[in-house]
Length: 379
Ligand code: NAD
Image 1 (cartoon, rainbow, N blue to C red):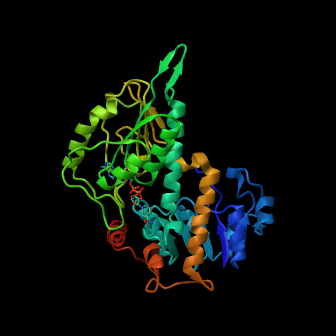
Image 2 (cartoon, helix red, strand yellow):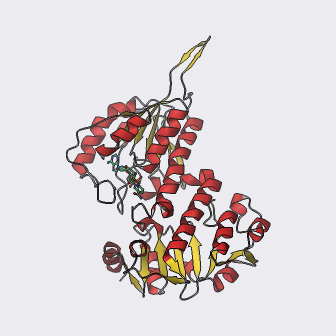
Image 3 (cartoon, rainbow, N blue to C red):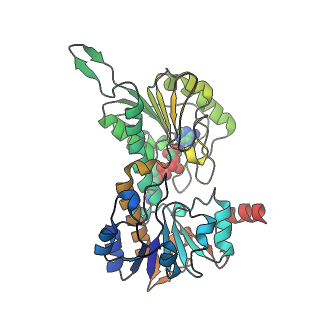
């Protein structure tokens, strides 16, 4: 197959292909055609891709004209799809629950698409799980940004001039991102507390040396895939009320809560944020999917009238773009190696991974919930 990808446009710096992975795709028998300058966001010269075996062409139109597979880091625009030739497959992050126009356009143009957000959570799929690889780096980057922006040190320090108390970090949502945030904050010497509606994570929090806090919000739980069940507005209200004290005592709050396929839950309202001391920092990792924190803006830093800095950095893994690109490109390479046999996509009837990620095919949206939502809104 002929494989290509787009050049990253700011604020995105991550890429769907890096030279190491180009080399592996070529070893698998594929041809990689890339537009010149494709690696500029990572300061990767064309020569590095060429040495890995890629064919460099003048521009993206020349690269996509013959491509069978177009890899994307961010969902492409509907105009970008005009460049993709009929019969080709688009694969990567497509943000299907928020990008209804794109999903509708993929189906209408009869393009097949492989959506990595829909990856099943099974052992065999772990190496293709881009949500996890990127969430892990996001959790790490969130702590580093908070440590850089806050007006105090993270570790306890005993000096002749006096003793500095460790920073208090509160992580809300202990999935892949939250666990990495806890581990990173601990490594920097902070005192860490964490909360999740899925009580099963308590053990993992403790094993990282952090304290798990509990609140009584009634029945909570998780789906078969391990995702949190959505709380009712009343439960979220109770959660906020009980969390206010822990939030007020924290120097840094990192929120990572997501509910699959839904707008992110509102974990902190202005009231809880106002309870924090001026100079403290909140990092909202869900800023681009509706925001866990009232007042957070995706891609921006906002200081509240009470002096609390709310960071809605997006895309957070772009802060460590080189490693994030390598992990993502590896995820895609494993996906390609699994779902294609002799250049043909395996049938969704025969393979649970294809069945999970194949979002559009034969001019239709395959995901039932999305189909009814999107066909309802675009017709
Ligand atoms: P996610 O990104 O969907 O959500 C992040 C966290 O927010 C989750 O832990 C969730 O429980 C929590 N959350 C949701 N609503 C909340 C609320 N109101 N208050 C507090 N926290 C709330 O989750 P994720 O990081 O994708 O991981 C979810 C689980 O799936 C984890 O246990 C992870 O280890 C597991 N997982 C399994 C596989 C696999 O088996 N292949 C792959 C990835 C993740």
